[in-house]
Amino acid sequence: MDQIERIRKRQLKFALGVGIPYFAFVIGTFLLVYLAGAAVSKVSILGFPLHYWLVAIAIYPITWGLFIWYVNKANTIEDEIAEAVEGE
Image (cartoon, rainbow, N blue to C red; front, side, top):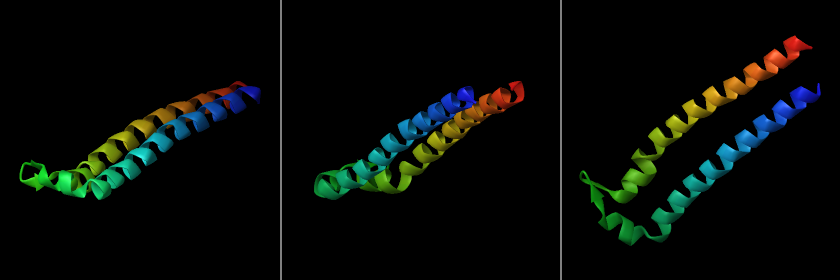
């Protein structure tokens, strides 16, 4: 049972290590667009203002990429839990 607790703590540490920086990134992006709106809206990439890229276009691929990576890593940790339970 001690091994399962160690794996669960590792899983929690991993979840917080991914979740907190991602949350800070999203909030920071919106704050950047809000606080520096005039400067950010002057920059254009492929015909779209930079603030559109940051809050409407770029955030989704970043989120999905992080989501896919996180789920794969979490499944690996879950497999370790299953192996630990089978071993007992």
